[in-house]
Image 1 (cartoon, rainbow, N blue to C red):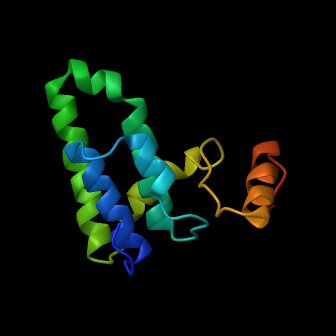
Image 2 (cartoon, rainbow, N blue to C red):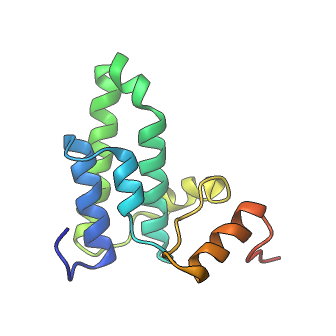
Length: 126
C-alpha cells in the first residue's frame, strides 16, 4: 500500500482490490484502517464484511454478483473523493456495529480495546 494515503483513500483502494480479486476480503479486513471514528469508513467496513458473507450467493447468481460489485465500486468512489457516504447507507449498517467491531491498532492499548469489546462491556454509551 502506498504510504501517505488518507484512511478513506486506503479503504477505497482495499474495496477496489477486493472487487477485482486483487486481494481476499479477509486480507482487506486485516489491512483496513484501525481505530476509526469516521462513520463512512465504519459503514464501508461492514459492507466489506457482508460482501465476504455473501460469497456463496455471488458464485451462484451473476446478477447479484454484479450488484454487489457495483455497490463496492460506488462506496470506493465516494470514499476516494473524500466524501461522506449517504446517511441511509451509514444508518443501514449501524445495527451490525456490535457484532463485527472495527479492528484496533496493534499493541497493548489496542488489545485492551478489542478485549473489552469482545466481552461487550467496553465503551458503552447509555
